[in-house]
Image 1: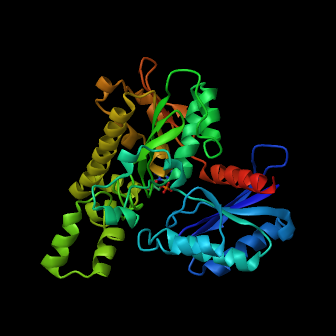
Image 2: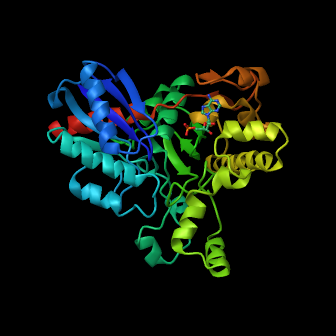
Length: 395
Ligand code: AMP
């Protein structure tokens, strides 16, 4: 059973192809294109690559195409991407302008090119379905809440992978089992003491989640993927009055505000133009005060959310770093963990320096909280849920 998972960015089309014949998902091949301006052409090229490589001869070779879809109005979970579901995604384009449109375009293109192959989406909001209601509500009038203004949470596939993998690495098979089966049976009990994890997905887009016994208790992103920590060029958390103030003071239009907050904000806005942490770090090293401040704000925000979930979980068993920055930037991990010994977090400086893009424990042997680097595997989480969806549909 082969399942193709395309990862559709605004200027990239990447993919991974998994085989589930007799197993839990073997990666057969992966690839992709950067600097894409025409998604139709890029998808055609990807399908050509898969044909030429002998991976996918015809539509019959694919059990499904699975998408890491972002959000849809009034729905979440793992869903077949019918025209109605895609329409409900489109209704959220204003909330996730950088993320939803490329997926909608891609899904429609796949539907045209492969009409007999089921298209299934695992929504990024799905992992947060069981967060306590108090953590999902904004203090807005009821009519705003009824219009969908609430915290959803994003990066669900990544945080779910961390929930599963951290439990496996901590020898908590009971929690790993619960995390793996969350979308089928969220009521599975655990055998031992509660397992409390904070997952830090730090990359071009960043979010932090508290995870209790394999299920999220919350996520730093809210209504949209624009909130929480500062992102590469998106603002992160901001007092809503700032928008009204700048509109009234400078006569900004809605589009001006969107550009400022979604394209010119975040690390780019703070650092004076750089949005890649490597460039910002090298600028900071050569004395650029704005770049140094950008790093400081990023770290401060990460510690803020770490503290929030530490309190919500009543302590912590493991702190996990993942994604581009979390997996590769030892200096950011060290700054986030600095002087947290009162919370039981003590890094081993050498192990931290050595850890790069592979699983590693980076805490000191006597650290009460285990600190880990775990490379995420969002596509595998999507592929497994899509497989399960297909099996349930058949039964
Ligand atoms: P992501 O969105 O997960 O791809 O992460 C992108 C961010 O991770 C960028 O800010 C990159 O600078 C950073 N990043 C990715 N790979 C590396 C690496 N090998 N070394 C240092 N930083 C990296």
